[in-house]
Image (tube, rainbow, N blue to C red):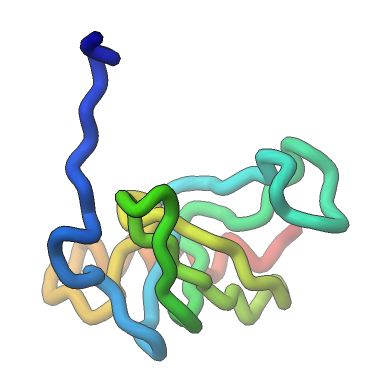
Length: 108
């Protein structure tokens, strides 16, 4: 029974981000129904928003879930590794993209 889509078991390696690390979102994140007090489909995080990792957990004994505090938005959202980028990265282009998104993301 091949599901056609196998994903790497992330928890075999250490987490990519650690508590206290500054990160930015690599994509827009909408409520899938798991965020209380917000409508399903409502945008929670904008691509480029900057936040801080508050905690690291796991999901289905396979993936890391990072509790990220988005200070400008006043919320904490669970994020997958692929949805985040560290702001410690040395690439100027990537850091500039995140910084530009932070300023743009303030308008709700």
